[in-house]
Length: 542
Ligand code: G16
Image (cartoon, rainbow, N blue to C red; front, side, top):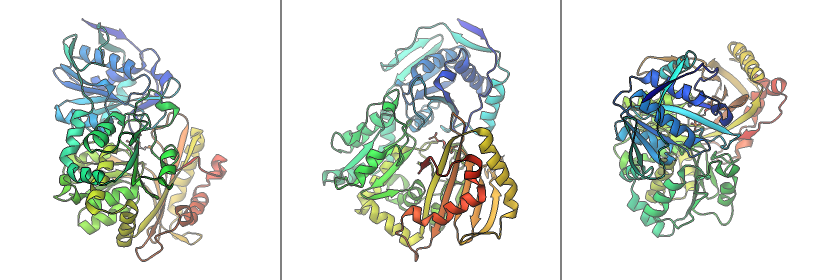
């Protein structure tokens, strides 16, 4: 029996870069999650007879919202819900399940790399039938719906046992609890040369994978330890915890410090990697060699043909605008197009669907391909392993050869977190107004070639997205990008992306902070970061 529950709108249910992310205590308010989920179904409906996938990264409050979503889905007329056992599905696995079972979409419950727990973050994202994040047209419509919603629908039904695979009826709908790992692991076997990697492991190749007590633990144990033969214990922090063990499940040199320290020590294994809260980000670190996400995209693209799934070559490469231009040089050498999109994986969906790009990547530690419509942490790790197995070289040697061929894009991102929103907006407004006067100006040895606010024209559907970051480009290929994060839950985060291009015949072995010193000074001079924020150093450097 369907029940209609009267409600009133909540302010601020606007999906950001990747869905609606708020504190758990915000989501826990009466009707808050229900309003948002019902708004999604109202926008993407009619949903009668359709299949919905539900999964999350296992963080605190996942199970509560999954039970709510199941009842609301039944009341709205879905015929089937597929949910990962334990409520778990990594974001790339959810994307695959949506595609494989022909679902009309999915709810992914995650706040990605943000911390979890009763006082921390939660999130809900809707993905469409191609398996990818809903495009802006859909998220805008969902937001509009949340502003006028006056009821949500539910059925009376007990909670579904999420810990036992099998099917049960909820109202007139079937809920199938599925193995969250099997389909995804099988897909990976079709893309990569598992036999070559297994042989390499059998010959003594070692790795450390930090699952950060997040969703990839069960996937990594199955694939790395069971199917590829890495020693038990290769996967560290492999049990998903609701609060990620009290840490930020963000695979960077700050939050995966233990892995970094190991990889730069005498005890380092051959290869190190990590993934984030929901399994879509990756960290790649060889023995004594960190590979920036931008470089990783370029190196993976240059070597992808060594893996069975990409032997036919790439149709194109796509990267978000703040990601370094290292991939552009690879695309040029391969004779394929390189697309520059706004930040957010949702902008890659059309290019992948249209067969215009095969590999995509972002500076924020996301890389992926047309096998799903999300970035995919373990995919990147497995492609690296495949390349290492075929080339028989270290990560460091592969990186050095790459730079000797293409030049090196020294790169860093400086984050200023928890700024008052007004302060951050004032900085951006002032800089935006100053952009037209910058070309021709010098900052130390750097001369501004051009400056603009990035806007994107989607070549597939003709839609435009304006105000996607401020770019200051210097002569010689260096640049600074300023942008406000769209994934935080408190105040504003200013991101400053610094990139310096060093040609192949130049100095390829400098320390990154040293190589970027002129750009760091120019960023301060151009934007007045200290003047606006009172901060003299970033909170996080990645
Ligand atoms: C999300 C998006 C990514 C984006 C990242 C950073 O990642 O899916 O495409 O690059 O946010 O966004 P921002 O700079 O706005 O914080 P995730 O891993 O958080 O879902």
